[in-house]
Image (cartoon, rainbow, N blue to C red):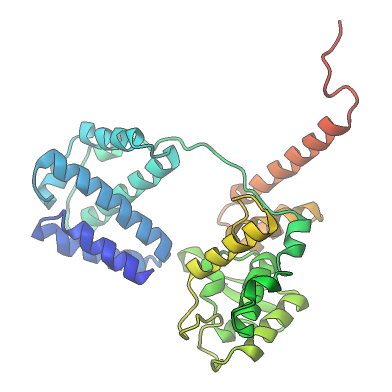
Length: 324
């Protein structure tokens, strides 16, 4: 991911005048080292700004400088968003792009004194709210019974992937949280997680999850010390999220699962199954590391929808019209 970010930053800088290039790098460093934004967020922000500055280059006819950013009027911002819509960008994607632009402007205002008063008048597009798509109990149960997929890979790679997947489901972690774990972040009954905005939480861990992790550590040919990454790639560096996603794609095809069956769906499954089992929302919120209860309450809608589906299938009058 670091290489992808560096490459995209370089491409972004081609759209900037010299006075802005240095500020872009400092903005990136601010996000990465002071705000502790995830590499995924930074990468998407850089891509969005590359799109924005590319649009401005066409509009201006030359690379963008600080003075031009300060003098941009509302119609240009709106034209950019309209341009993205014409190129099939979703409302959610446009919302993120506007967030990236405002984030950069906020940094430049604070550190350079640049101020664009019209940007505050631009409201974010309303993105359609979609419900999480958790996997079923049956699907998660069969997720790990896939030894045929590892016929030509070392045994420790299979043990590693099994440990990653059961950790995502058994502890409800985000994929970046799981892959950022070091060996000393876990013990026999809990693990220490650094979540969004560098927020730390302790998550209880089932013995079955711990045992899978220990099986992986024992078979891994690389030495495991306190500060070393828990999950390693075949070259010994920290395991990347794309490796996990590609393996999940293979599993999805093997089991005939929908495209919504992703590593993150295991986190949704964790919350949904806890709620179905009687856990209260506040506890789930703390376990998931959600900043607000509203983020957790979305899982109650899944329960409501499931109950409605049962009603529609079971009630003898559900499929008929009412008579007067």
